[in-house]
Length: 305
Image: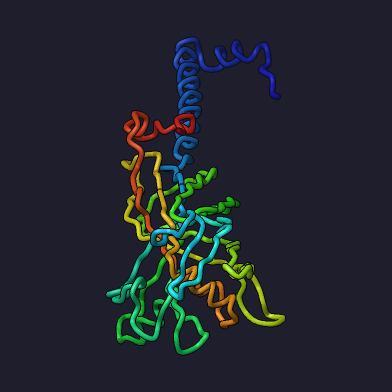
């Protein structure tokens, strides 16, 4: 640390003169204070514009169960006892879509033949094992093929959820908070790194399936990726607490296909779960607590719910 010579003020006064010294020292103090204030502003500007909070509600939705909440009667009349549908959320991401020209003209939720099961920017095909990007599909349809998207923000997490009863929703709160910068949010992407199903047919046959893909030595765990449409603008006027409530629904055909797979049919579990489930953003809103109406630059992490 530097030290001030004890005779420094007297020397400065002698050099500058009493009248000049009276003006120089207050001016130096003013510059020092301004430097502190400017540093403080830089720190405030480094804070995120908003924080994203996520929850995922999952449900295995079927028709009225038989005898007990966990027994499901398939379309072929087979009674299946559902023990558990378990999954692990490994990533949450907010997508910002952009396009030059006209972008894509088809609906990924209802793609044209032969494309099916569109998610994470690509679609499967009923004619081959290849994956096709949205731009490639658009080009094949004669469109611009210039659609693009970018990840505005993402977080890695590890949240395990288990469904052990039919038609009973389970809500998973994602403990991690995602800092947001300015941008337009067009979708929420959820990645399930692990998904499994355990059940038993009425003849005692145990069914165990996981999100495994491939055959023989090429078998591997393939993440199941979903996306839900969203419409949110993040800027300095946006509420600080942004809440994204997602609902993941597995339909009755999910169990039917698994029973067929247990009977020896060549069915990929990844395809089954992707084809018979959907993700929707049902609770899409920004928190409106009193802190969210604070003036620009006054957001504080201490205001977290």
